[in-house]
Amino acid sequence: MIEEKDGEKTRHIAKPRQKYDEADRKKIEKRYKEKTLLVCGIGPDEFNRVSACESAKGIWDCLKTSHEGTKKVKESKIDMLTSLNEYFKMKEGETINEMFTKLSCITNELRNLGEPISMSKQVRKVLRILPKS
Image 1: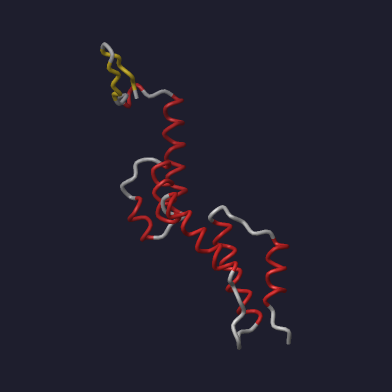
Image 2: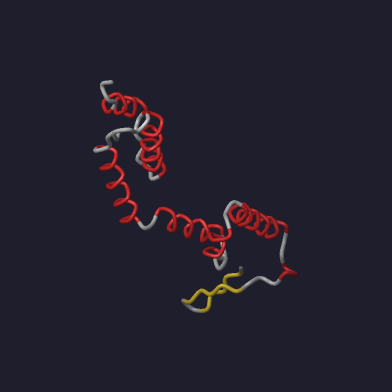
């Protein structure tokens, strides 16, 4: 991009390919690699969501919003998962393995949303909810 100042206005004009230097080529190559890495790591449904994005930052922001939601949605998810974790109990007839898998899903989702639960708290939780038998 070339910046042209016209009085107080600044407008960006695309630089013709003939005027690209080595630094321009490296920037273009880096941007292409960034986009390729992001696009190669997603499935077809997610690709349809981000296909219109022009930059790696745009793709990343779109994916982040679609998976985490907005800040308010993220906070609501954290509140809901924290509540599920606090009131989690082992159901009658449930095996320890099944119970631990369910609890792990909750703690993993919290960790992914930026609210990790320490391993010692997880262990204490499991020991508290185990049946006396």
